Image 1 (cartoon, one colour):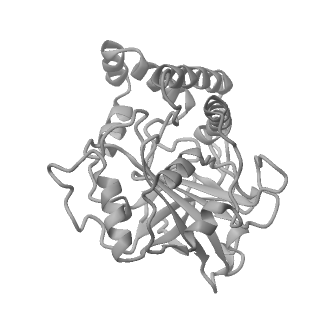
Image 2 (cartoon, rainbow, N blue to C red):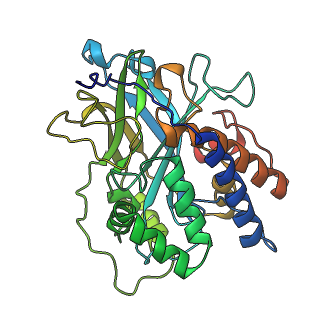
Amino acid sequence: MTQPTPELAKEVPPAGEQQHIDSLIERLRSKMENDYRKTRMFRDAHPKMHGCVRAAFAVEGGLPPELQVGLFRESRTFPAWVRFSNQSGTISPGSKPDIRGIAIKLMGVEGVTLDRQAPTDATHDFILISDSRFVTKDVAEFDGLVGALMGGALKLIWYFLTHLRVGRNLWGSLQRHASPLRIRYFSVVPYLWGTARAVKYSVTPRAHMGSAAPPKDGSSDYLREAMVKELVAADAVFDFAVQLEVDASRMPIEDPGITWDESLSPFRKVATVSIPRQAFDDPTRVEFGDNLSFNPWRCLPEHRPLGGISRARRQVYEALSKFRHERNAAARAEPAVTDAEWTRGQE
């Protein structure tokens, strides 16, 4: 019997997924409590921030009809905040090989977004990392990985021996870089594009990637120091692009551990992320960036996250962000261009 042809942008949630989502929330909350028992609580992932900077997100004009979707229906520039970070759940030095992250928060977005904290919120988030693959194929496998990481060396070794692709994906993604402004980033997971198509996102720097080697003896904060130096001298500019799913078998929705082949469907630019020269390395901005909350479900419905890892993120991000902010007695509110920190940045 022939198998039915997979559908584009089609989600197929596996049985028992919610059990693993609940387990992840409990595991990660426990880890945060243990790691930050005597200090201010940071994120469960991406706690080490290299910088939080003002930016502009300019949608291209004259896009072809198939790319005129949601945020990208017409040419427009959104004010934005961009946060660069290390992925590791512990605050580790920049010299350590790691996955790096970029989180982009647009402001002044029109329309009702998913998972708003308040009716007046007008923000839209994008979250990307420095690898084109997620480490696991689904929530169950990721829950097992987190459990192994928290369970000691023997449990971790056994996990990798029984999950070889997870080990390959993880070790292959741990890299050293000269600057967060010279890395290409990927959404890893797919997103809805309109009503019946799916895409993945990529953010590529205009500056030549890898044009400088990481320092052999740099400080633990050399990635932040590199950003400070570069943003004193010049603006940083990135191309924001989308990759349309064209083959549901070779470009799966439910397995983000597979890179979508760019020869099947190349990334197509739809916007420009511009980070102007600025000073950002001060205590007020650091506290602001640490308090910011990013969630891929904070988006317009036309750009809804797809797949199991995204379904887990919806609950995990919300639960842990609320837990962290309550523990720190910090306000959990979305920024606007009228806020003091944005206004101060314009001076």
